Image 1: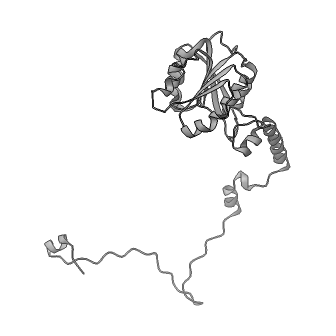
Image 2 (image 1 turned 120 degrees about the vertical axis):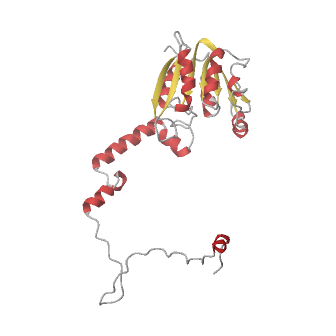
Image 3 (image 1 turned 180 degrees about the vertical axis):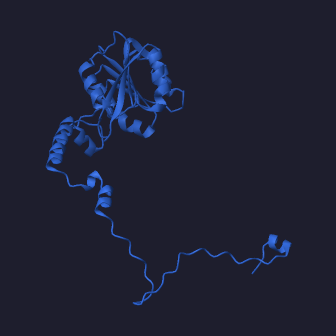
Length: 260
């Protein structure tokens, strides 16, 4: 056996590598060679503990509840949206990718004379353009920008701005010649800096719609708005496409354009 440098310096002979310990040798039986002991059968109680809700056969009451839930979600348009993997309503019309409670409130309170700015673009741009006088949106993703710009109507303007933290993107509303705006939507990137720069681009009664406002990393931005006199209306619930609950908040001041 060859020796390592350390072993040759000491003059000691190398030791054979230690063998791995094995389990106890099973004794052969009179009927043949050794065999592994069979594990005891799992008890019914133990099996029951491992069962999940999806393993259980639904009761008639469960099926009735599921049917009612399906009908409600279908009427809401969620089933259509989930299947299409797009934020659309039951008739296939585009929706903003925010919570249904927020969509319902805005649907009732947005007026045709409003000017809207969006950080982030998409189906929401198409939705706003049907309800507001004008929509200006900024998009950082070149591929998405190219895809959406051919779909927007004449009263919507889409700008591509490269993304850089605390750069031109988050200042797009403040630097827009179309300002001031009735509504500024924060649903793109660099959201905290977008919020900090959006205040100066609002009309006196303007509001900010902030999607995913429940995320921890956005707290500095939401706190900044509150410290600058805004109140917060959190609208929590389901939304198009996703099978989870999240939050969209509207930040507003007294005598705002939505009558909050």
